[in-house]
Length: 389
Ligand SMILES: *Cc1c(COP(=O)(O)O)cnc(C)c1O
Image (cartoon, rainbow, N blue to C red; front, side):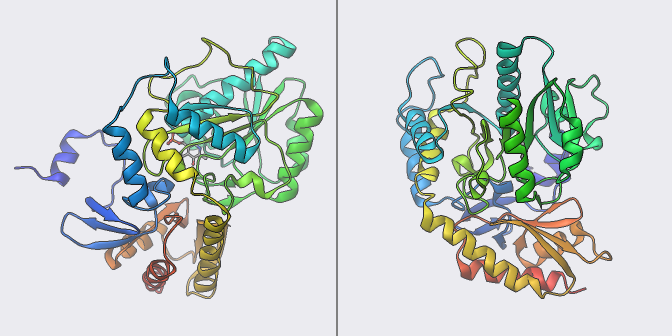
């Protein structure tokens, strides 16, 4: 007899602490579990299902491509890939795109490109990358090393050398870490996994300036913040800055595995033939999905994200046991009263019919970007009840 809970425990590596739910279908912002119970989706598959569950246009793009040609590898020209790359370059002003399969892989590409840029221009030894304390950049060896959290720097020694960690929003501390060995600075404009903490605008601007001044590669990790999540196509666009590399993944293909690394005019010729690659990156089905997502992220859509945020701030601003609300757009961190545990609040929410996430001690919301005001308010009411204890 098949039992999803028991058979999961017995057959799948035990690396996740799962909630006691098996989700089997969904439409829009509504998920359904194996018992037929419905939930409002405040998580979107960790910020991936940008247009919600099984969005009609997205499904059409995926099904059409899957039934035409699913994969060819990167040895041949690909219409869906080119369409996505062109769109990304047009909308961001960046010059070249490399497609990967995930956020970690996108950041690996960025790290390699930054070091190669410095190697080409300055020779060996100028290879240090400054990231921030509390950052999260992925689970591969290099991106774990880039991640500025001690809990991730255990067991798997030796880690990749050449990363230094700066406390966020501290300009003096950052200045002190920059040396003639620094080749790149990598940030998330809103630290996601680290607790939904937005960086100060002046700090982001300072990084942009110092990078220009010292020919340091400025990398913005938009894996979570990108693709409309923060109310801008990419979150750095809120500020008057010009990153040399932008990495993204999560929401880019609306719930299929894809990532992208965007390079500006300084870096566009750094990685060339034979120096980087992937079998699946930019897969035809994923790229078709990404085009369906990215081509619909326009000003009106981004305004919807911002309007949703206003509702969240209004509804939760005065809610019981909410201490503060952080993040941008539909990337929301809720600091809760210290007698509450985020995981318990989430468990209660799930009981009540809404599925949020946690980030450190906070409750985190990453609803679908096109969630209706009605579903949003319904979900917030359930959340508010869960917070009342
Ligand atoms: C999720 C995340 C990653 C890792 O992405 P994967 O697709 O899980 O490899 C990297 N950076 C940030 C900012 C993220 O939120």
